[in-house]
Amino acid sequence: MPPAVPDAGNANADVLRRVFPEADLSVAAPSDPVGQALHLVDAFLPTWTIRLTGNATGPDGHWHCSLRESRGSDEDELIGFGTGPVIGLAVVAALLRVACAKAAH
Image (cartoon, rainbow, N blue to C red; front, side, top):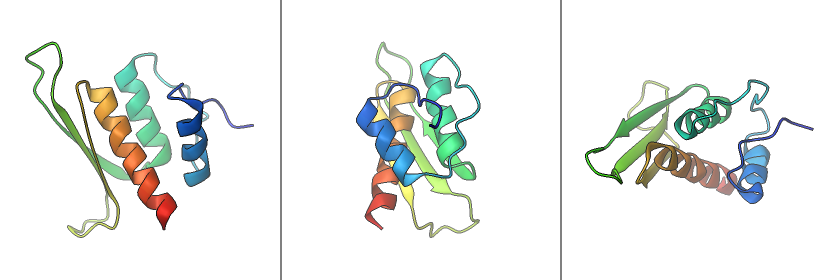
């Protein structure tokens, strides 16, 4: 049985395992939420580029994350976008969008 994915809901974790069966989850995830989100991207999309932009001036920021294949092309096949009040949620939203797009192919 593969190591546990940080609890983002069992349904999401099961989907991610099915869509990314080659993911290496043997490295323990960090304890902070941002570290956990980045750990998931590293495990499921190890060669992809993460771009984060946002505004952290209030209690709830406005974060945007894009994930794209690092192939040196501007016409990447799969790109994931996510937004959220905190960095971790924006990253996970982008990862789930990539997973949905990959599952649909």
